[in-house]
Length: 449
Image (cartoon, rainbow, N blue to C red):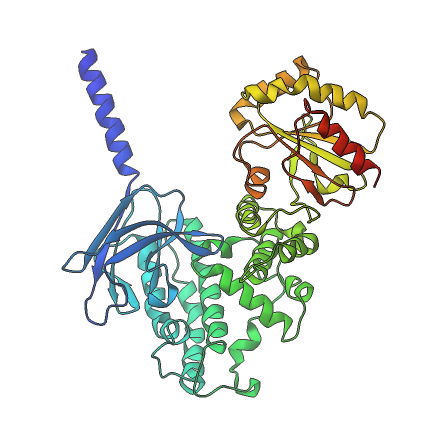
């Protein structure tokens, strides 16, 4: 009986897991195909597609993906290169969708969910606008044919929105917003495409005068759509007008995340120096606060930063044992000794008595000793216990693993001791250990400067 019950439970579990899987399948027509050999499945992250899987296209043009969606919302299939074709679809656990690609164009085929049935109708209604404004390479369109079509489709969008009545309220709200995002994107992107004829503002149809509205993006929903970041950025620039500065452009965005995405999108493209990176952080760092933005900043910082004596220090900020955030840049005016260590590191622990003695000898002087633990989050309690048991002084910070400080300073082994001067510049990122008298000599020399 127990075996029967166990087997039934295992079967139920297996069926449940299977029910959570979603399936995307389709065909790429070989005639003039822009997507060749492989096709990508993409999630939407921060208003842009990010590849999560690729698969080979079979000889007959067929392809398929079976995966568990990380969230309910928009995904895309096609090429990572926007100009070769990307097609959005809406997905929740257990859904199936079928798509056929013909050149850069795509459409839903077969039986689809109520959500993708609505999305399919919208894609068909705006197909020509997308072709002319996004996939403009090889298109002979100009404003004389695009503007009338934009006006005609805009005249049908209110009626279309009234047809969005699936049982999925979340989708209905997002889909109604998507109709606005898409129309604005096609209208604004068209103005940036190379053409044989270019319109004057007097040629613009009335639709362009409706684009700018107060509080256009009251939430970050646009960043869950395929071209969300581009659409949002172009909107803010269009609203601010030509010649507007960064602050004027940012005034047309609502949330900190939106502003951070625009800063990242507009400032980091082609960035090749750490000085420019730091200037961006100093001026706009208050907007770059989302976990995703911080993660991307860490990668960019590590890529751009090179260490040299007398050069500017790469900043870092971590919580201390009370949870208060403490940064390296916040210590200017004092010489800083940074100790990178971990509770599991034998050589690190061996230096603790010498470090404590050094701290006593430097007490009352303009010096800060910052100990940065690279213990993983799971060992945080162990770190806190060691601080208490060993009565560790100075500033104790927790980096939650091999994070920004180790990436920027290219630290692959610990302990590592680094010294920074009163102006926040690098003295050395490979200082002697506390057990070596030369470290004290180095610190005292810096204090005299």
